[in-house]
Image 1 (cartoon, rainbow, N blue to C red):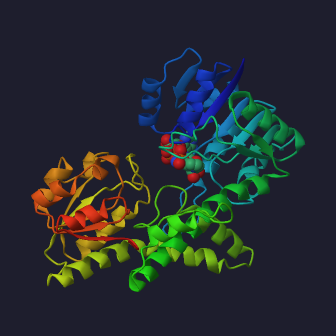
Image 2 (spheres, helix red, strand yellow):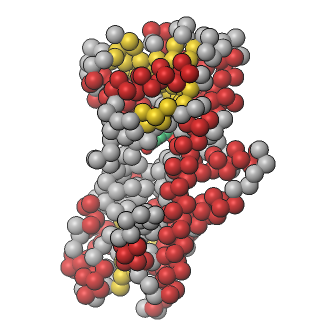
Image 3 (cartoon, rainbow, N blue to C red):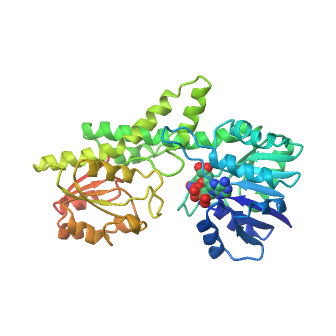
Length: 411
Ligand SMILES: NC(=O)c1ccc[n+]([C@@H]2O[C@H](COP(=O)([O-])OP(=O)(O)OC[C@H]3O[C@@H](n4cnc5c(N)ncnc54)[C@H](O)[C@@H]3O)[C@@H](O)[C@H]2O)c1
């Protein structure tokens, strides 16, 4: 039985480990630099075919190493390849001759050649001779029940034909999905970046439309639902308080930066980033406008922020636009109470009803299922006067009928 080492036991690495172990075809070594992640993996997955460890020497036992470490951006939005380079160093130091190294982390076109291979070459190791190298970008969508790791199709690119073929064979051995082999590493790297940038641009488009339609008095969600009846060439995206998560708001910067260093300026991508980054401030401005209508100012108003996570029904705070909304509200001296059932550590109260009782105005920042269930009557009884629905997920007509001021994003 072959052995796979998975480096990084986070959102991407651990589900991969689970699938490999449960599939029964591989022994798996889960590696991480975080003791907490190792401990969590040990607790959540017990199998004689699995160990979680911080001992990177165990890579020597592996036939395949899969790198699933983070690829964040610095404050100036430049990619930070530190974790990828450091994971590769661990592999180099413990490489079993002929090992297949696969990078799953999201990386820029060119990164395997410009960042990964030099780490190996520094120690005299040559790709294709001493090890095989492939890139297979991860596409997991946390919280998505229909499309999970096992059935999401994958793209693979290799340093050479053998690397690509071996990587494709590996993924086909445990996925129930198409595995497409692309011509080179760069092509595979670029797929992931354009997928996420596509989403960022489309969301920026509807966010800009929301701001425009708010001035024109047109209901954007209704228009989108009309437009999406076209069976081809239109894909519905919806406006909101901004874009969050580890991927969509980060990956476009990778391409923007990489192209810039080769002499091309991505004006369109930059613009999309700016529009989406501006949505938290726009959301707060909607509240200010509604307060003005009733002769109030944001300063000193008791505002409840429902949701901190970037996405519904998960507790992930990374790049969450809700955090920006919180920051702006505080900067403008609103009296803010925040609550997220998935992030108790950052919540000021223990429940949404408790929050509503304390606040005159609410900004809903995350469409958690629990929030959608709150009835307009409950809001009214708690004394809420204004709702800014940052996810257009509440019952607008019923809230208005209950005598509460309602404003969504373009809605
Ligand atoms: N989270 C997602 O939805 C998602 C989806 C697709 C792709 N990706 C990409 O996958 C990659 C991993 O993302 P994630 O969400 O799993 O990140 P994560 O932060 O949840 O997990 C990464 C793990 O890697 C560990 N780590 C850091 N440096 C290490 C090293 N040198 N050696 C071993 N372990 C190390 C960290 O301790 C952490 O546990 C990123 O490139 C990300 O862009 C993420």
